[in-house]
Amino acid sequence: MTEIYSSTFNVKPQECYAAVDLGSNSFHMVISQYTNGQFTVVDRQREVVRLAAGLDENKNLSEEVAERALKALSEFGQLLRNLPSENIRAVGTNALRQLKSKSKFLDRAEHALGHSIEIIAGREEARLIYLGVSKWSSGGEESRLVIDIGGGSTEIIAGLGDQSVIRESLEVGCVTLSKQFFADGKLSEKRFNKAVLVAKLAIQPVVEQFRAQGWRQVIGCSGTMKSIASAMIAGGWSKDGMHKDALQKLLQTAIDAKHVDKLKIAGLSRDRTPVFAGGLSIIMALFELFDIQQMSVSDIALREGVLFDLVGRSSPEDIRGISVKAMQKQWAVDVTHADNVKRTALKLYQQINADWDIQDIWFLSLLEWASQLHEIGLRISHDSYHKHGAYIVENGDMAGFARRDQLILSALIIGHRRKFPVSTYESLPSSLVTPAKRLAVLLRLAVLLNRGRAQQGSLPLTLSAFNQELQLNFTDQWLDAHPLTAADLKQEQSWLKSMGVKLKFNKTSTSGEG
Image (tube, rainbow, N blue to C red):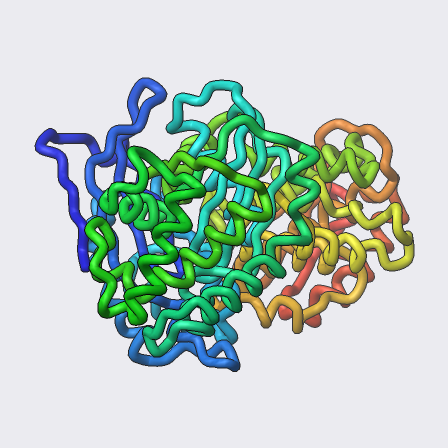
């Protein structure tokens, strides 16, 4: 099923931003014009794909569902062709997180869409959901509990105003629960009781921390919430939103129907019927565990949060930069030294980014963040701090970062010293292996050149690149005055050779290479 809304006015492509949400049940895309701090929807499309239903017990995706997904992405891609790539962000959620052979499907999906796809962690999904709801709602600084039931997961977020305070993503969704208990379409009190119990078991561990935070308003968002609320209103059990007593009446109506095909509830669309029972079971569990009496329902969800986050990336308030600084503080990083390394790394980058084909602004950002975080593991152990730091970054809750971003940052950190971990880089997506290796070389050189940890101005050096050969030139006899650096560069020649890079350097402004 496709939903399309197009405006009747003309807009400039550079003023438009697009968010693509590859959910476990449906794929969504929204294109909006951003002017004067506000978004105006220009185009919107939705395709029911049921990605989660296409996963078998080994988390392999059926070819039938894969083809359905690729067809939807091709249609989305047609509408995205005229937009600047930096104004587009596509994110994948629970079903893609669960998928066993991610790279194989992602290569096909990115080709169909014509744009890269980021698989985001559950808590990052929760952050973006809350961001969208809070930015687009009129709740002001009120405390709120926001709940989103997706096809494969349920996100619960408590916050104040625009800021989320507690974010959780739970492994229970309307598609997976419907598949587990209502796959044949039969509805009964016994089946609902079992489904609600499973939902409670998934939700119960996080209830107390949310109760401790508190809230004045409860907001449900996304398709499941909207369809259940519409069914309540159409049935005459509610005038707006969801109410606890209306929920019981809806449940009894479903039980009396005995089969999803016999559900005759106005407001419940045909494409939502197969996952209705699973979604209703999760809502029943939520209302009981959180003692919810009434819940308002929002049309806003993940994709609107992605739009605001995308715009924020070009501002000083980029959440990724804020996350990096927070991690530096948490792990007591020597910020002065990290800034020195960053300054040197960016200088080297600027000199060879064109020759090494790493000109994308994203590569520059990755190098900057890796420089700031390369010593994050020092509080655990000095000898293997690069390994500890890589683990922290790969597995940490980093707001604003996709799974792919964290994997590359982790690779840069573990590869910034000692023997180069070639296998770590070869396991990255194929299109990123060479750029990641080249960024790692620049980070390694920057760390090496700042080993003395002394505050210093711009280093008197130039770097040039030709294919896999680097030439590092020092002026003012700087290297003669730093014999330890010369020795380190000798060792670095050997380590870089293992990854196919030949490093040359001169000892003084007049002598030959070392």
